[in-house]
Structures are given as C-alpha cells and as structure tokens.
Amino acid sequence: MNPPTSILIIGAGIAGLAAARTLQDHGLTVEVCDKGRRAGGRHALRTSRSAPGMQWEHGAPAFEASDPRFLHLLQAWEAQGRVAAWLPDGVDRPLWVATPDAAALGDLLAAELNALHLQWEVERIERRDDAWWLHGAPGTRGPFEALVLNLPPAQASRLLHASGCAELKGLAIATEGVVMEPCWAAMLARSDGSHSAFDRLVPAAGPIALAVREAAKPGRGDLGCFTFHATAEFSKTHLEATKQDVACLLAPAVSRLLGTTVTADELMVHRWRYARAMSANPPPVAAHQPELALYLCGDWLSAEGGIEGAWLSGIAAAGRLLGDPPEGPPPPPPSGQQTLF
Image (cartoon, rainbow, N blue to C red; front, side, top):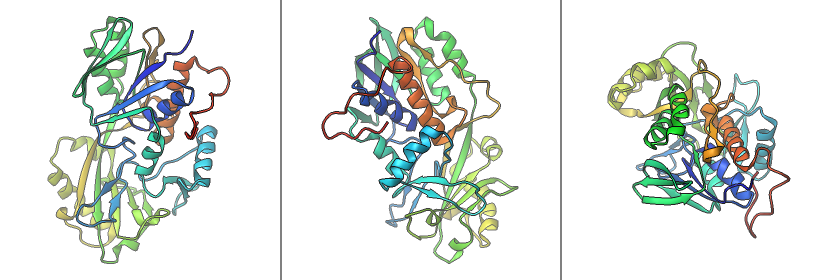
C-alpha cells in the first residue's frame, strides 16, 4: 500500500515539525498549521519590547537527550552551530539548548516545509469521501489523504469527538483520559548584580521547581534575565488564578532564591496549561488509526517526554504513516533543500 501523498499536520510543535520534515524528506506533500504566531510549540522564546536583547526561554529552558537517534541528530546540529551542550552545576550529563536562542530550533525544523500556516484556528475536522477536511479560521481546507494531530490530549480529544466519526470514538475517549500537568512560568530581569547567584537550581522545597539564569547558557547575553518554573502542585492549585495573583504568590520565593527583594510587578508570568504528561498516566494509547489515515504525536505519547520525547513521537508517527518502517532511505530532497532526518 502506497503512503498518502497529501498530508495535513495540525500543530507546529517539535513533534509535528519532526513528522513533517520526515515525511517531506520522503517525497510527500505536507502542510502544517498552528494557531500560534511562531513554530516550535512550548520550545518558546519571550522577548522584551521595551529592552531589546532581553529574552527568556520560558517553555523549555534546556532539554535532555539519551536516545541514540536524537543524540546523533544533536551532534550533527552542534557541528553546524545550531545547538550547544550545557553542563551547569548539579547536572551529571549535558543538557542541550538551541542557538542562538530557543526559537531557532522551531525555525530550523520549519525551514523549507512545503507549507506552514500560522495563526490558523482549527475548529473542526471532518472525514468525508475517504479524505480529511479542516474547518476553522482559514475556512474549509481539503481534501487531505492523511491527518496528523500534534496537540495536547485534551485538544486532540475535542477534535476527535467533534469530527462525528463513529470509528474515532474509542480513540477520543482514550485520549481524553490522558492527564497533563500545567506549569506557571515567571520571568524576571534584574541589573543589580544578583544575576550571578546561580546558573540553574532545582529547589528542594517551595513553589519553584526550576530556576535558570538565562546568561549561563551558551551564546546568551548577560542582561540579568531569569526564568522560573513553578511546581506542578502550585500550578494546579492556582491554575485559574490571574497573572497578577500568581506573580504575588511567586515573588517571595523568587526573592529567597536571589537573595534580594523582588516585587510582583517585576515578574512576567505565563501559564502553560498542558506542560507535561503525568508520570501516573497509563501506557500511551494506540495513537493511530491507519484505516482512517489518522495519526497522533506529541511528547505525551513518548516515555522520554520533553523535547526529545516530542521529536521521537513525531518521527514515529511519520514512520507509521509511511508503513513503519519505510523501505530504504528517503529519496534525495529537492535541489537546495537540506535533509534533516
């Protein structure tokens, strides 16, 4: 059976981009859409409008790698200057960061895609005439021979339920049962010298789970920028709180870590509603229905989680779509296009 030739991927996070590039490198026509303004998902970058150069990697400040396939790719990217290894105090094996900043990884994976549509709000998917159709802010698009959903499980489940396709009911229910933990992120810029206190901390107690000095990472400027991730417990308890309330609650803990007074007004906060899959989740659902040419991917479907898990899930979804495993190496890319996978 030949793989489909027209594929739509909803979600331009790392998993969706990895799937797209893998499929495109095998000669298939792929379109990717996302409701955000930039590709990369939670591997995100916040910049200051008032102070150029100040920036915070508030989604994934750094990521781990252990799978040989992912490590091989990172080493190739390192040689090209696209990522760098980082070994802060208290870490027994290197972490990885994109260079010059977190946004560069999404840009790299999205480069030379057949079609990337940003700020597309998908309202509904439909299975009709043995093809997939998309309904939403861009209007109706289709037909597509295959569909890949790179979405948090709650969002994927809503689309599956709303599709009206009876064959997807079981997958929709199973996906609905996957629990994701939220994470409140706080960002701070200080120029009073406190920015030399640490590189990376994992506090043993309190509402802060992770603190990172952005300048400690390779290739970053030293402008006193810090990123803090709240614990899952804090984030769940205050999930629907206002940003101002969250800043007020986190400011004392941030002050203790830095050894100086930080006020709530100095903190910018961002809520990641679907930050990570709970370790207590059941084994990943069978996230594909090849008879309907439907596939799911995302870090929540991988035991590794994080950026590595997202990438592994994306190439796994592409492999299933191609006929897991695809026969032989991918064909040469079009002239001038770099093969990533």
